[in-house]
Length: 142
Ligand code: 5GP
Image (cartoon, rainbow, N blue to C red; front, side, top):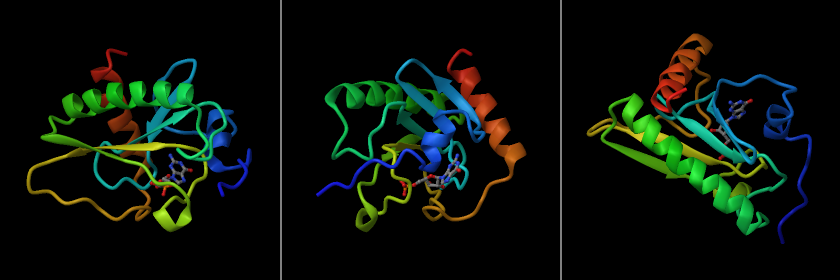
């Protein structure tokens, strides 16, 4: 059984503006920002703004909105980093690797012959995250 949504999870706090993030995109229903422990340069997280623990309790409307933003961000990171491909990753519940319990998709540029760093590995430098966020916003036309 899916557990209840906890409104005090870290991404709910980011959505409410209670803690900062390196934002790359926002619309009425979704938010996209840099992952603080990126698996690769340009690693973005895309979330619905409404409450959803993961894909198991999300509404079709939340999923439609979030996947449209995932596509928008995938195109932008590919262009911003001149990537060879884009990896989209999403975890549901702790045994499947989920560590933050607000639905999110990882969007990660990939390069021929370059591996990824570990999931929830090392904290990135904030200056570098800010630089990467700016590159992605430029690719989005912002
Ligand atoms: P998951 O729940 O899919 O396992 O991963 C959660 C992701 O959120 C991880 O990749 C982790 O690096 C990222 N993360 C955890 N806490 C924060 C935070 O406070 N800010 C940002 N921007 N990312 C976070």
